Amino acid sequence: MARRPAEQIAAVDPERCTGCGYCELACPHDTIVMDGCQARILEACTACWVCLRQCPVAALSRAARTREAERQAMPRSARPSG
Ligand code: SF4
Ligand code: SF4
Image 1 (cartoon, rainbow, N blue to C red):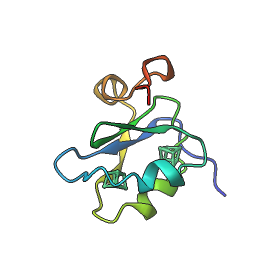
Image 2 (image 1 turned 90 degrees about the vertical axis):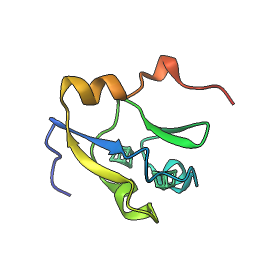
Image 3 (image 1 turned 135 degrees about the horizontal axis):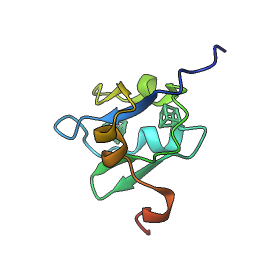
């Protein structure tokens, strides 16, 4: 597999996400958590894009790892409990 560009991260469209949790189950790096009815990407996302193929409503996309994307991503320490 090609090495991922370090400047990318997965992003969730909150308008599309139904909270089904498929992406959380599929992520091989455990960098998606469910925050209520929304998937949240952890900042440790490796940009492997496995989750993009799993989402039934195309709520996940590739995003540039900008400051805004980093802000929307969640540090592991802020993982929601439960
Ligand atoms: S791109 Fe890969 S590492 Fe990042 S959230 Fe999706 S499945 Fe997980
Ligand atoms: S698979 Fe798609 S719709 Fe389901 S929780 Fe993940 S982002 Fe949301």
